[in-house]
Length: 99
Image (cartoon, rainbow, N blue to C red; front, top):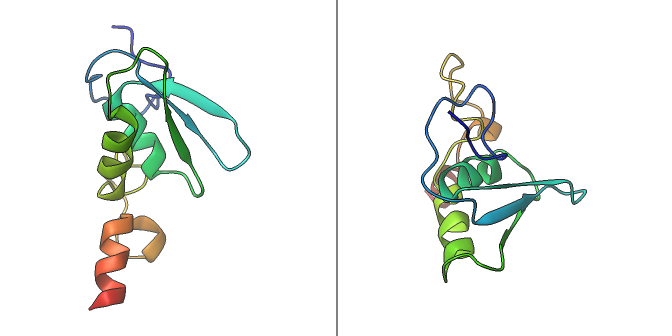
């Protein structure tokens, strides 16, 4: 099974559709991927950015950005406890801060 370039080798989840976004890290290195893996990759980066590919459906970048907000970094790693702030999603961090 061929998966998009944004899919981490340890992430066994299937692609959600065609390659539609490019995810860049803080130094502008990047990978293109489907919405699902793009969001998972973006959630795992500090200072990451998402860009829609030219032929992508309207709103894809904002969907990936919004989804990444609620995903914990490195979600394929299910063996580690998720208690430290850097292990929580951005939404969980905001909720803790605002509580």
